[in-house]
Amino acid sequence: NGIIADMTGEQKRGKIFGRVQSALLFGMFITTMSVVPMAGEIVLGFHGWRVAFVLVGLISVVVSALVLVFMVEPPHTQPEGMESNACRAVIHEFRSLARFFTIPTFCVMIMQGVFG
Image (cartoon, rainbow, N blue to C red; front, side, top):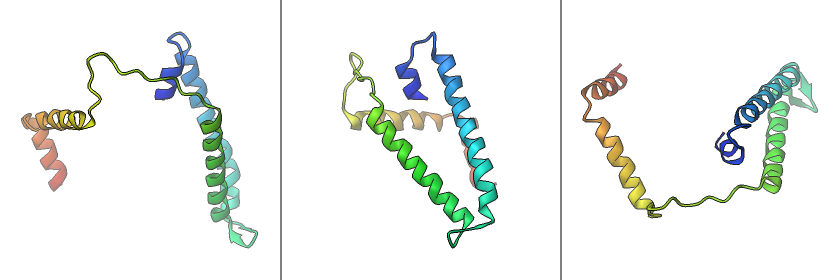
């Protein structure tokens, strides 16, 4: 989703998000309709669910390779005044997290999650 936001203009962003979500749901539909009947069968001497698992994995690797080859990522620029020091960023995030523990209701929610 972040790539879509980076690569599309504000006017077309909603339409592109819709197309990506539609393609995702269509892929899930096709996969479900083809893999579920195969799961209970014996295919090439293997249980069908194992063959389906390998096929889906192979298709995922192929699609990943195609994205790697054909997608051109836009250049990222460092905002003015931002340091590139990763340690300072991590320390800043830990301080932000520690501030949550000063909120009593947050502490109660954490304790409730720990004990039950």
